[in-house]
Length: 183
Image 1 (cartoon, rainbow, N blue to C red):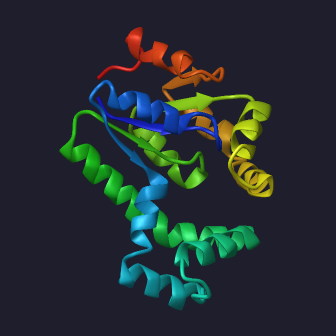
Image 2 (image 1 turned 60 degrees about the horizontal axis):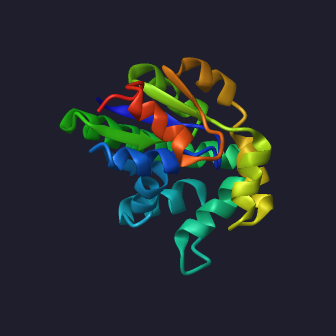
């Protein structure tokens, strides 16, 4: 069975994907898919030309991130270029595999995918998520990510399975053991 996995920043999506490997799932993270696109010269040129992003650092991804967080308009411009490509890649993965999990952020541009495929929403309280993020990252970025994922309630309602993550891989593992997530 194929699943899309979504949830707010630091809700446990990566932990779920790590556990899924133990059940023979092929796992993919949208961040990795998008990062691979930043290596594609055509896409980099499209971003540079269509929305005027200038390469100012060694890592183009950092330039994109800075531009992305400056405004909602910037976010939408980047998503309008990147999301259609990512969506096609996801559809292609699901056409070729019967046992895959792909993590996607809970943004409205992904809603039609969440309705099209079987979707898992990983739910965790904001304080637990903030604490997880703060262990290794700048809390300001958490707050920015958390604020742009404001469509999550709409997304959550369209998901087939909602998992409660109570800060333990065992709490997520139970969903496999009970057959709620089927390989």
